Length: 160
Image (tube, rainbow, N blue to C red; front, side):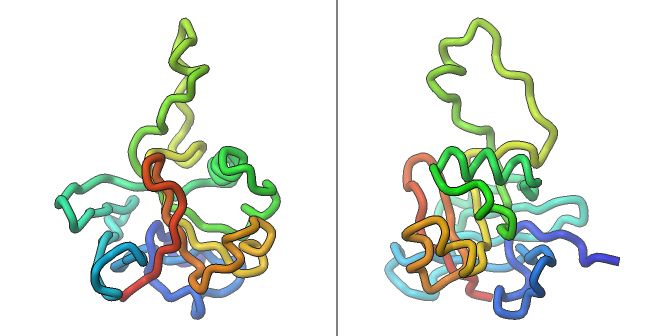
């Protein structure tokens, strides 16, 4: 039986088995904080998904794992080779920001099943071999990155 899929980080990337989903439960940070060990996000396993807390403002959101289609949609948005998303494992939350086409459309796009597309925030674990294919992600020391439409893509790290 497979380990329950994670959405934020239970097992450090170095311990995760190739092909097995990453565990997302844990605390995360990034390099734009005052202290290197400052917790920016806390991810909890709810048993049916994940809950992400932003420690800066206390916002709590439900999150879910991206499936293959969702990862491919996100990778396409970023202009990365789609096949480099194969070994990635991503957690996402919030509603996907509308594109200009969506804003101008007479009818809104049909909603996809959970996991079929990315939301406002995305937290991913990408092994080095896949990161190298995406360009500058290959230069990161960490297997983790975070994306939002305002901050863009930034290296993230699992703290505990």
